[in-house]
Structures are given as structure tokens and as C-alpha cells.
Image (cartoon, rainbow, N blue to C red; front, side, top):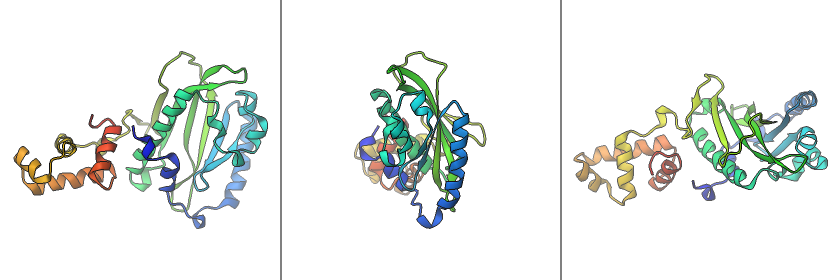
Length: 254
């Protein structure tokens, strides 16, 4: 993975949401409904404002069930990334990698498909007694801006019925419109590279130029260049260095 080269905040910024396209008067009214629902729910509920790049709300259950400081929870919009503070350090680093991978996947999709996916995680978090317990966290787009870009993300965290210890966090990606469950690579079939494209990308990684690749594979340089363009388009990157890194991160090449 190459999380050091990009952060979740940088991925969020790719949404390029304008203040003219978000309606906070409307969201403030809807937030009240979320707050009221959270008082009846046994789950820990939070929302994230992608435009402002911060937490928007967290329910009191983070305090009563997981032992967070109640003042932190009530002032979550000013406190920063406090919800991450009690996650097991190993799981927290994995979550960061998965969030970045998911962001890359989302931005490889057409705009109209980017809000159709729900992430479900199981990871370890400290509870009110100071013990690590497995929790299940579901995250999906709750509110979009006027251009259908993801604006408000909602997460629901519950203590998992499965308390079996595992070294790696569990993750599932579901298309909530179709019910499709995606593979860990997070690349749908139409985004996968062909065998020839993989072969060419590996040769590029070895330092071969287009003419050298054409000679080695007995194809025209025109065909090689067309494959290069297709690789960049499918992986939604600007150059072959980014293509190599992205393909490696997704497990397309090794």
C-alpha cells in the first residue's frame, strides 16, 4: 500500500464540493432527526461532513457504551479525530489503508455510481471498561450536494456478536442498489486490466520503452500506446508511475 503518498483528506478534496452546492439550513434540520434517532438506537452513530473535512455529529452511546469522554462527543465538530483514538493501533493503520483504497476505487467510477457503496468493517476498539472488543462499523453516503457528490457520510458502530480474535480487520463492500458484494481488490470487472495490459504494465515497470515492448511482444508501437492509454483510463491515473503504484495496491500486479 502507498498511504504515505495520499491521505483521506486529499481524497475528500477530490470531491471539489462548493459552498454554493451545499444547503446547511436543510442539513441542520435533518441532523435533528439523526440526533433524535440516535437517542432511541442502541448503536453508536456518527456523521462526517466531507465539505468541512470534519466530524459533524456523534451520539451519546459513544460515551455510555465505549467510554468516550462525554464532553468530547458533544463537541465532536471542534475536537478532531477523537473517534479514532480508542481503536486498536494495528487496526487503525489498516483502516487508513482501506479508506484510501476505497477512495481510489470510488474515484475510478463514473460520478453517478460513486455513492452506491456501503463499507462494513469489523475491528477492535476500547470499551468503557478499557478492554478491546470487536465492533462492526457501517458507513455510507447519507446526503449529497446539488451535483450528487458525497457530502455527509453516516457511520453506525455496534459491538459485534463475533468476538473471535483476528490479526486483520474484516471488511465488506456492498453495492446497496444491486446487493453485489465486491472482492477485496475493490475493482469491478469493467475496471480490471486485461492480461495484455498487465503484461505491458509489468514491462513498463521494468523500464522498457514502447518500441522495446512492441518488439518484445511482436505488436505495433501504435497498439502498445493504445494499451498504455487504456491502462491510465481504467486506473484513473495521470502517468505510468501512478498506474504501477495503483495496480500494485489493488493486487492487480505484484
